[in-house]
Image (tube, rainbow, N blue to C red; front, side, top):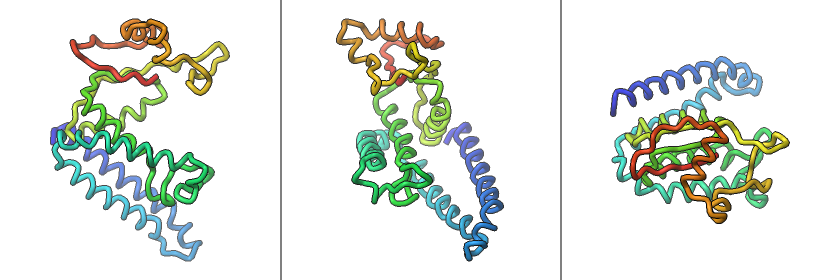
Length: 219
């Protein structure tokens, strides 16, 4: 494990410890009011931390190239689990928690978190060198960089653009009929012209693209 990865791991452990202490301080009274031991919520969260540490240790020892072979299975599993949170007939598997359906099997698993790992592994498997995405995903980029460092995977160059909006100030979205890259290509646009247009519209400050590099554009 590199020095950077060790520092990130140490920072992660420190944040987890701080989070557990804060959780105990905030939940002890609530647990007692429910007739449970004051450490009830702390212990439950601690079980999850221990399970996570075991999985992390196994993943850190797993060869990165071997992990890349799991890119598509991980992506399929992530998409299938995320579908469970939106399909109307799967509410028994992904019930509403505090008004939203983000978890599967109660609060045992949040599919979007597995999706972050799937994207990181898929990027490495495909040799993605540049990622262009909206500024609203900066926090996700930090998580991706952490996973890449811990797993020993190459980290692409990330660029974040301001959100593109229509004349009414609404964020461009395919569900609202905004033009897609596929539509632009069908109209005769080349990959280079699409990237130039994105740079011009979104003020992307991009580094020089190495020969043979690949981009994943996620505006």
